[in-house]
Image 1 (tube, helix red, strand yellow):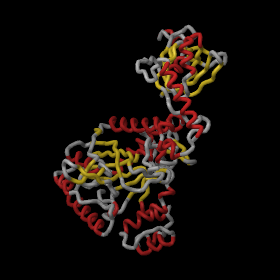
Image 2 (image 1 turned 90 degrees about the vertical axis):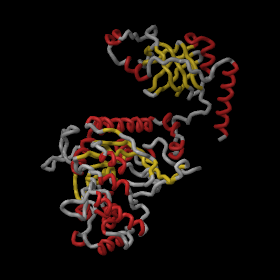
Image 3 (image 1 turned 180 degrees about the vertical axis):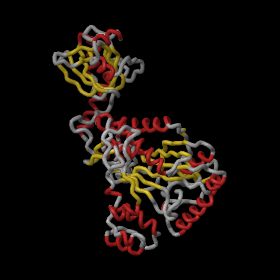
Length: 515
């Protein structure tokens, strides 16, 4: 703490000296001609191309105007080498008293690591062959009052990295790369939908009824309307209203809010994409999801295989003979594994198929394995809780689990072959849920009955069960075409494609406890 105070005082003393000498610490009139990334490009292309662009490299060549944050300084008396960076990269610059003048060099000597500077000058090669910007004019653009963390050690405390993400981004290239990739993942996803004639829409983030998922909502109050509102837990019911209205292909990249625990996989505020397509089934969406993930993986990482926490995840899929497709493209890869929940419990979870339909015996299995399930739980909830404990952690490669019980799928269409199950899937990769999709209920009477069942469960103490949404049932009464919809957790997808162990690594400003 004492060392930090000493450094802070020294910086403030320099600031006062600069002010007294007439230097503007925060000007806003420096014009940038090129990024550092562009300078690196200029040094790598042929001289013929440079000639066409009228760019000449060398000490007496084309002058560039570049700005960035100063990250390192090596002083040699009347000259110095510095490193500074902008959003596109880092470059070395040479500052010499004879070029910037005595006054300019005096100002430079009072600058600190972390200051933003503007440099004008040509590119030349040093004796070691490194391309360097020769400073013929150097200006202070913004004074950094506080010293940056020591570069060698960086910011080791994860809590500090998340609370002061700006410092993390300055000092940690890996953190910067994660969020650059995140942006690319979202933009690729948006392009994927737009190329397939989906329309991007926006639905309310404050809703009179929390619906579309089983979760505890955040409550708020609207003064002018004099009513309680809820931050949305999902946009689903509003998006399906739009399908009723005639928008047959819609998607929303949205923020959802769930008043639940915080962990490496959960943040109270998170990002999803939800999309709905008329005249489609849940099987169509499984095909689309395979194609989408392959498209994103190739665009972002340049490969259909990614390493996540020591496991190689393969998006290529298998052909009809059960062989991995060796050289797929995004549209023509193989199928990912598809298995029903009940089959997964016996083949992966190790439950005897002879007792899979017996609630009492399943509760005994849960008790033996230390899985907490109350005796009042319905059969469908028992199955899903056993699945969560015994199967989900083992689903490393992309796997679609299908055939979810009606009791845990209040918005999913019942299967035509088994009315106790639904036309629903969840996608699991690396032992966690990534997506949830299903063929939608478009029978208003069926949806009304499902809501009634949910209301009954709330009465019995299930606070996360769905609330009756009469307006949505009324919308269905006007007619909704056969439709399938899906939600994909973008934060978890980014974790997967950036090999990040915690959701906090992929959210710029994760929620933290007060200190």
